[in-house]
Image (cartoon, rainbow over all chains, first blue to last red; front, side):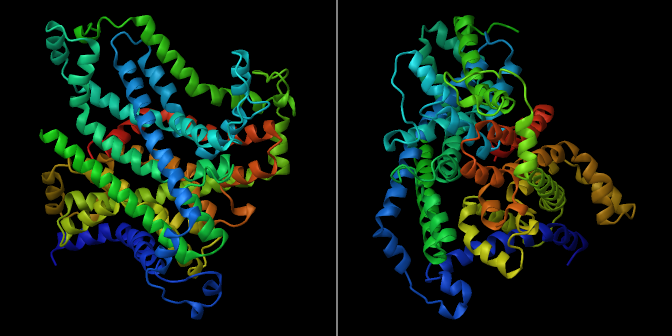
Length: 293
Length: 278
């Protein structure tokens, strides 16, 4: 082995070993765990462990709570992601407008929620959206709207969590969109204006296509992040009311660390991974196809 | 600033008004948190809900640290976040440099494997990782939080992107002069990587400080909780004490918010480097 090759391995080894032992190995074991009936008894004595093949997976597909959590998570992704991307893009376009003043200050203000601690701001939102003494209901009351039981009504709990997630995250994608918008050549808009294209047409035929690749990346990252919903329901609703905010990861957490069904919980984790992989792959395929036309 | 033709007709009032509304919505919950945290106990639940305290009181903070032991949790968070930041900075930088500048057998293949691993959600690893930590005796210890975070694919990738701009001639010249690889790394490479090291430090520190799910799993008693875990637990027991909870939220949020305000240029750069070019 040459000196350079040896040095290369020496430098890469510590990080690669950490990733291998504390990520690679657990991921591989998760697959193995998911085809066993690992539970509280196996935790005490490994002799109780049995191989169950696809039993956990088949079992899950017959568990109403799993389907409910999958439906809740899908609801969160299908409404939350487009909403979040629309707000991010809108904010980025406002910041990119030549007429905008104090751009650096506004950007910092809009980005601030991104760096805050999720648990802490979720607690804040819980009070702001409180039915009787929350400021949101008080404000709505001033407008003559009856109080809404935001986190206590099964119809409203998930939409409230969506609003919270959008508030917390939109700044992140906004910064990425802003960089993308700044890279669009101004002559394009100039030419479109001379041709008499309306503002909406300019957005449809210049801004969106030019942002295409960025939109695709942001979409994929956001979808995969939103599928991993956990801390928001954990802090804001504990999965209630009527289990309307139990997400797949929340279900996995309860199965694994409350009931100690680690085999079943691993199967949940793997199913979620496969779902995320399938959805993002379809998005990438679709994106590539569109760009070729 | 020149007036760009494509956008000149946007009414300046409309744009700045919309930005102002967005900024208010973004900051209002944080301002409300700060305001309630200095209200006398019980005031926030009056009707109509007050926006500002009738008098400034720091009793909530006193009570928070005296009664709930939040000071310990603050120290835990600081210790864990600093250890993760320093440790992973060293490991990720060494690996990132190796992937960018040192030719070694299997380099490209290994890098592809690391990149592919990015699609796997961290939660997939958590259940077996817990069992592994149990075997190693690291459950309910800071080591259980720190050790798995000592290297990240994102960190390696970030350093690699940046280190590729270091000229090979510079490294070769040092080798011809007889400098060892370690010496080259610490004396030549590290100083050149300074900007990306700052970026990576902020990212890592904030990530570690804000992390919730894994510390919640691996830390099992109050004494060892980091701030987010302690706050989540506290919010279950003291849900009626709005003012004290908000003091807890301030203590948790303000350190990362300040860090961001001071070093935001580096933070935004890292964000763009990590996602758009990735």
